[in-house]
Amino acid sequence: MHFKVTGEIHTIETITTGRGIRELRRLNRVYGKTTWRKCKGTAKIRLSDGAIMLAEVHWYEGHGKGKKELKIKKYLE
Image (tube, rainbow, N blue to C red):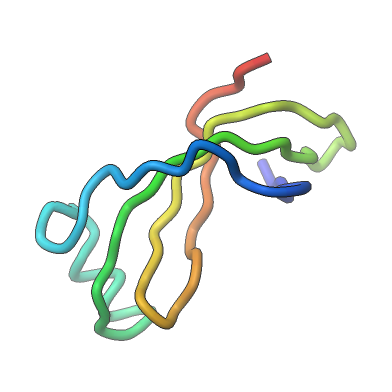
């Protein structure tokens, strides 16, 4: 399901970095080699049907690359 983050992501926490990321080879191949972190946080999101919900989101963040591959892990409302 497609979604868009509305506003800021709160309570940001790093889950793992570097070699602890299972998808490290793929991330380096697709986006370029850099220092990667897997992060999580809570944010209000707008779903493709227009509903706005609070959810826990996970993403990969690379130095100089920004946030990549945001995904919804669970709904909090």
